[in-house]
Length: 291
Ligand SMILES: Cc1cc2nc3c(=O)[nH]c(=O)nc-3n(C[C@H](O)[C@H](O)[C@H](O)COP(=O)(O)OP(=O)(O)OC[C@H]3O[C@@H](n4cnc5c(N)ncnc54)[C@H](O)[C@@H]3O)c2cc1C
Image 1 (tube, rainbow, N blue to C red):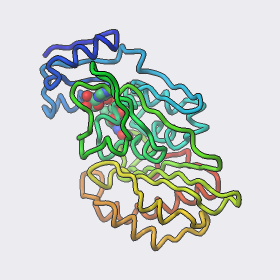
Image 2: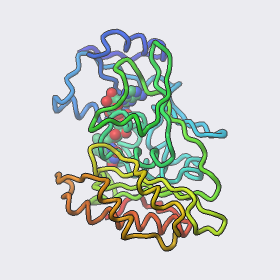
Image 3: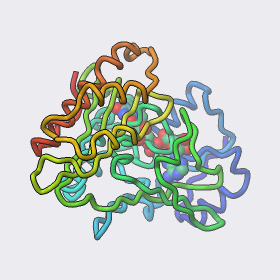
Image 4: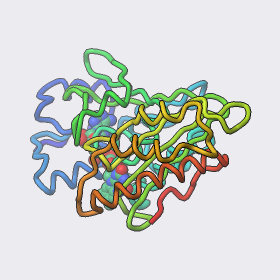
């Protein structure tokens, strides 16, 4: 196997442009190396992008831009992200243990496209846009359009994910990410749910809502039907029977080694209710995980 580790983005894109179908991009390697060891992704060439410092870092200035190579630990500890996008910082703090958070990147979490990717749900509720670059230039794509299925995305083999862009939430917005795992660390989500509510001046009527889930469908899902049911509702007295019916008709949980479909179905509406309570009361669940 050829292992290539360029120092500039131009060099990386040139390498990727040539025999891109045979080349596996590797950032932190916390997914790729496991897949490689299991022979799930036999690679003739590995393109290691960790030295591309241009793709690393967070800038909050009218909007937020997070470089694809930014580690989960950096996201979890970033003061402005914690202040403006608490659900995203919380999700990053729940990815594996510290070693995984230090090596693993936000871009890798998105491009790996696991149905259980923790960062996907909070990024979906914040309407994240992705900048993909190649030798042919760049293009922007909504995260919701990016995911096609389990480990399937709209990324072309010749493209790298460069950054994630987030608009600032409207005033009186509150967001939370809740994750159910068998223990509070080192555990991939059995169910994950992110919610962002925007409230009217009475701080109860919901004027806008975004909800997304992971680990209950072949891909992380943004639930637009939940949004429609929440707009105009009371945050403190949400229509839970209607919301539960909509929620369960939108997902397709499966049995796997982490949990059964029945357990996921039972837990999901309670997670939504808890998330609504957190947003209604103005506090986010900074614990992230629960058991
Ligand atoms: C012990 C352990 C615990 C874990 N726990 C969790 C958890 O709780 N929650 C969770 O969501 N995940 C978890 N993971 C999975 C993993 O850590 C994350 O998905 C991580 O964010 C992947 O980032 P990475 O940089 O290591 O990606 P890599 O493994 O380097 O790459 C992942 C995929 O993305 C592609 N890729 C990476 N960066 C780019 C880029 N910039 N442009 C184009 N393609 C790119 C690669 O080709 C590959 O397909 C865990 C992994 C381990 C080993």
